[in-house]
Image 1 (cartoon, one colour):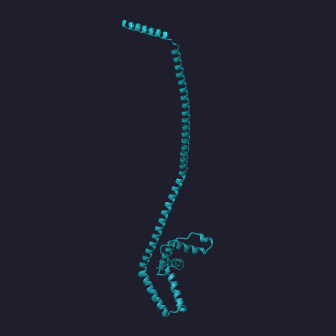
Image 2: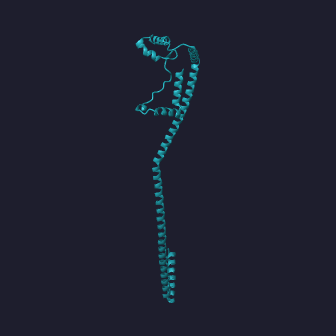
Image 3: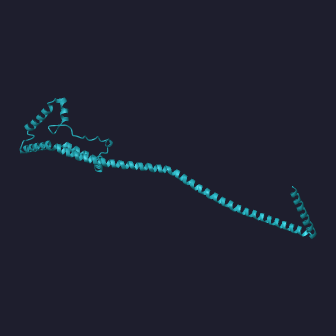
Length: 249
């Protein structure tokens, strides 16, 4: 029973977070030899086998090859008789009190030991479950942090493409502005050239009109009244001839 409680307490300290780690680290810090770096073997879940409540089974297994099956009992009986015969140990009232206490203790262990062990196991399982829950929560948070880090790395990888797209957009805007300015310059130059062409056409038309008017005035001025009468008479004659020709047809 006591060995079981010791093992339960040890496993509880082992699984109890920073306190157990601190105690283990403090216990290891006193030993500075290279053996302190060796891995610690896991603690057993249950205690070893015993006989008569307190005698380890390993003692019987150790004495069997040398003394046989009855060797441990003969050794224990002989040792007890030696202590009593040589009065190394004297039986008195304290012996009977110790025997009564041992009987009560053994009875309590046999009677209440399984219940206490089950209660200790239950406490140990609750602590282990709580530690496992904390571990799972930490693992989930770390896994989420890893996923977030991978996502950020993916975003950093895509940042180059984003900058290239923005750079292309800026270059396109600059090209559009350049073409708009070129179109504006072309339109202004075309307007000025059209204005010059229009001015030249206007000057040519005015010159032609002036020349036509001058020729008409000159021709009209050179015709005499007699010539005008003769031309009118000739026109009338031509019209009559045309009328007669049309009537004959």
